[in-house]
Length: 312
Ligand code: CDT
Image 1: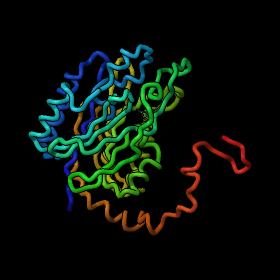
Image 2: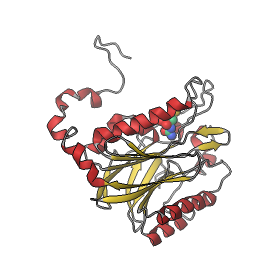
Image 3: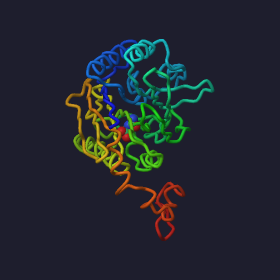
Image 4: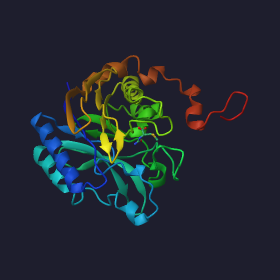
């Protein structure tokens, strides 16, 4: 058995006016709860230090800059790093990263139990749009504020396991999980900020939105025989609701833990990394069963091309 007791630290709403210090204090409270529950790894959501700012259209670069971190750890997050180091607990969380070269990424990091940053992932699948869209009920401007990640889908050796990260919209793309699966990933950590309503389809019920989230995480876990820890930032942010429903999914695709509230809430599960072995050795033994000679379109084209040559 290679058991890691994992805490999925769902976070409730963060308002535009909330300070980093106040948010980090909430994260430390969740961390303390996780430490008391015996967790050695705690996963927080996407962009968890601030409100989900890509819903706001901004033209002023100085204003945009206020949502980004230029170093990690920094003054605001250092107390959380200190608390985790003292307790020998690894963490993973998402934030908006501005590099010294001035690039902007939607980023998630992973630490070891001594709080060294041992892994970094930058979101590849950026949803939404880059200009103000008057036809939407609300904006989703990730393509405006971030560049697509430039690190691919790396997998890291940490705590005697192979670990990878995805961020929010990535969870809807089977290619993302398979990139990790092909590196033997055993644990996939992902955070999300997903609006409760579809800005382009008011008839889509919230239950269906949560169903799609579960569906993708469960399929990704099962088809790659890996644990998936999917952690929401949820609740009503300045009148904009995000759904909750954080889950921990076993390598057989079954949900073993699910959040009950849309606030700060910790899920805890003892995840045995050896439970990934059966699926990887049988139905999803990639080296025996994959037929790459038929997969050329997966990397050769993006949009649809119909058999008669017309483009979708
Ligand atoms: N944060 C994020 O990636 N949210 C998206 C919403 C897509 S709607 C434009 C998601 O896939 O959950």
